[in-house]
Structures are given as C-alpha cells and as structure tokens.
Image (cartoon, rainbow, N blue to C red; front, side, top):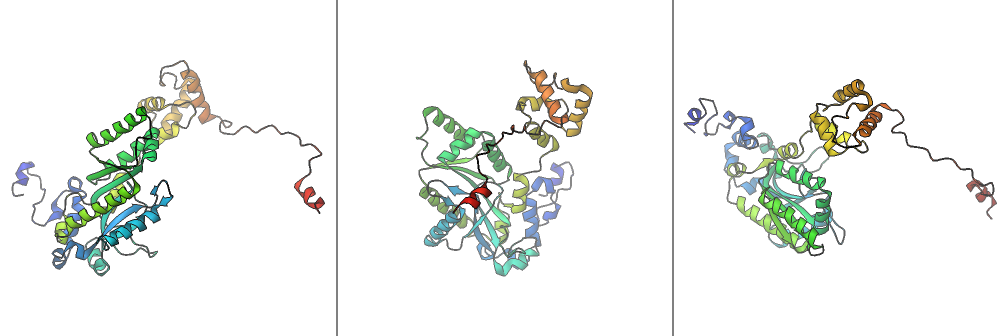
Length: 362
C-alpha cells in the first residue's frame, strides 16, 4: 500500500488504511460499494458476528418450476424451508422473488433490530412501501441455473435463449456460477447426447461454470441444502466487516445492472430488422457494418437508393435484389403490414340467426 503511488506512476490511488473512499470506483466496483459501507458503519457494529447482524437468504426465482408434477416456485420454496428446518438451517429465509439471472442464489439481509443502524451506512433492508421484504442487499457470490433434462435440451435447441442466459450469468459479477441439470440424458439419441455433453463441457472448460448433473428433483433439493450449509458455515466465524469484505460479494443493484445492461441503439435496431420477412442475421450484420445502425441512417439510405438501396450490401445471392425491394417496401408502403381480408361469402337464407333460434325454441 505504501508503494502504490510509485507503482502507478504517482497516481493517487489511496492507501489500505480504512480510507476506502480513496480507491477509484471503476477499478474496484462492486468491492468499492461494500468497502465504503464498512467505512460508514459504527465501530461497534463492525466487530459483531456476521450472522448476528444479517440473516442468510436463499433466493428462489419466482418463475422457477420443476417438471413432472407441477412443482412451481412456491412449492419449491416451501419444500426447501422444510428441509432447512429439519437440518438445523431454520434461520435461513427462503425468499421467492424474480431474480435478474439464474434460478437460485444466496444473500444476506439485515435483521430487524439492525435495519436502521445499517441504513445509515447505505445498507438497505427491511420492508418496502407495500410491506414486502426488500431483496437482500448483499449477494454471497454464488448463483445456480437449474434445468431439467428436457428443458436443457429445449434451451440448447433454441440456441439464442441458451446463449442469452449464459452471457447474463457471466456478466452478473458473481464469481461462483453453477449450471445444474437434473434428470437423465439417456432419453435422447446418441447425436443429441453428444451435443448436450459438448455444451456442458463448454460451460465448464471455456466459461468456467461448475457443472452438476443429478438424477432427480430430490437430489437437487439435497444439493441446495448442502450448498446452503456450506455458505452459512463459511461466514459463521466472520465479523461484519470481514464478511462484507469477502472477495466475490456483490450488491443487488450491481447484479441487476450488470446482468442485463442497457442495449445500444444498433443492437435494438438490428433485432427489429430481423422481423422483416426474409432478412437473415448475416444480412442484418452487413447492414449494420455498412453504417446503417440507426433508423435515421437506414431511412436516409432508402431515400437515396430507392428499391435497390441494399442490393450491394446484402449477402451474396440471386435474391438480394428482391430482398432489397422487400425491405424498401416494408418501410415505405402503407399496405405492407395490413393483413389481407378473407373474401366474404354469403350465408344461405336457410341458416337461422342466434336471435331467431332463441325466439323459436320452446
């Protein structure tokens, strides 16, 4: 710490003496936010046991469900609560809510008697204006995405949804990511099993996920229970300050911002262009690379080039002139999006209307 300024060319980066506000925000986020909260805490609170001040929380995504029996998030949360109570984990609060990423994650929320004292340090807790529990302010570094075998196969087949989920987890800031598949993959043919095995290997080797395959729903409950026990034991000997400064912890707000960042205009515009019939991803990429990355830029090109405005930009092929014309018509014709009305057919006179049927019924 004393030689930090010399190592960075004389930059003022602060020293490790409790003055965490001296550290640059961008380089140490989300650690900066947690360290600043420790600095603001009253000295008496810093040395208290972590679980004396905070309550452990297991978050269950409210959209989570398990196949074969209609197990929704409410049933799953209640089953986990029963297991925790039977295994000495009754203090763990099982919170069913929509989470930004994954299906399960662990956090810590302030206990009721410490809510006000922690709020002064910027640590939120307690109830919101509607009387509901706020999400845990601190997340304890671990996230689990669970799939049953059929769901995993469907997600991989979709491709886009699978990649979106994986990328969101990688961006979220939590260092310990688990991809859990429960159920047997033997139900699929050899080619399908090879593809699924390749995806699991990629998750583990390339993306650094911890991959877990389990036989049944009951095994998943046991895995979550054992993981909860390990996390509770990890923090049971730590003080509040030691717990908050544990590497890998992030705040709820950081998780929300990082897992689903705002999309740039070109990305949203590219997705909209894919709705034009016949336009492929490659064609959209060529249009964006050509500088048509906003609606204004694309419409300017339409006005200047007419129906053949994109003929030289689209992917090589016999139909690119027609596709260019179709794109032009999509944006310029008022009739393009109007559905064709089916031809009217006259009804036979012998068919009674509903009013006549009612009036003639006994």
